[in-house]
Length: 437
Ligand code: SAH
Ligand code: SF4
Ligand code: F3S
Image (cartoon, rainbow, N blue to C red; front, top):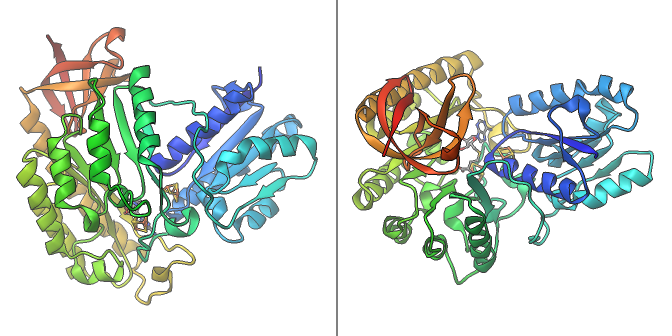
């Protein structure tokens, strides 16, 4: 049997997109390979959100030259956000002439046709579509994240934050029909999945292009599915988080008690330059509203340092937000210049060393907050959805409704099940516990 090997970079959306590529290859009779060297087709699903994501992909593609020499029939395909950038595909094929197929984000689901084309010709297939296509339903998926299942609800983004490349490589926002999403969720729950995570660049604006439904309606509909499961979603844009939605979240017995609500920066001046369309005060108001309806909700965030013109004072505003809110977790990033975005042309690009210093301070602060939160867990009994086994720790692992990772001694039957775990110790941010009945 022929084998495929896929390397994925970037966000959960890309992880799910790779599940579709795997699904397409499975439908063609391929199976997953454990390593690159045993594969007949090697695929890279790339990301271009920051420079380092591109560098990593470049390095790994370059390293295939040797394998390609050893095996003339090996097919190398590169697709995703990196290749979708204007003029990038031509650049890439010049640099790595051994690549067989280059595709973008708008024709990822046509991979079967691209592969068949390649098998009939010697020269590489290089196809990037400029415009977003109509949403395709029914693409096969080989899922890899049981007991969680990713479900797309929107594609693309209309927000044009000035630092961000996503609107340029993913196109305008399109929403899937409510009925298609609900049906997919029902099927997944019936198949035994215990957690659904809805995906979109900005899930809160779901339905804006459909007219008669919004994200709150979608949450309410999915929550009606009559079996025990958890419902999560990402990512949220603070400007679109409405009271109607917060009420729908609070009223659902399926929605997890966690929300990822990227603030990006704590300074109003920087938020304006970023085109985020909210102030720090607006953000605090949203947090108050969330905590009014769901008092124990865990809030996580994305935070960036070193945006053009960011001063020490602006940075201290970000530190202040982190101190005041007490995030349950935060992804922190150093601003990375992206060609074609407005921020790339702004004066006042921040010195790399200054940014590095700032991010280190931020990471230390967030870690200390997480440690305190971990200590508060000790002695509590929490419900964990067991999602895997950690070889190194020799323990099973899973998350609670707040998204906290817990390790515990369990057995194979626990995989994919809800188990009660008593937290016994906290080492840094990871929690250890014991199963209880
Ligand atoms: N749509 C999501 C996020 C997508 S990208 C949202 O708006 O929340 C994930 C994160 O990467 C962003 O939240 C941002 O913090 C970070 N990011 C985006 N562009 C970046 C850039 N040019 N440099 C550094 N970080 C960036
Ligand atoms: Fe990028 Fe902003 Fe869209 Fe998120 S909301 S994908 S940060 S443009
Ligand atoms: Fe990267 Fe594209 Fe996601 S740029 S973060 S893979 S949408």
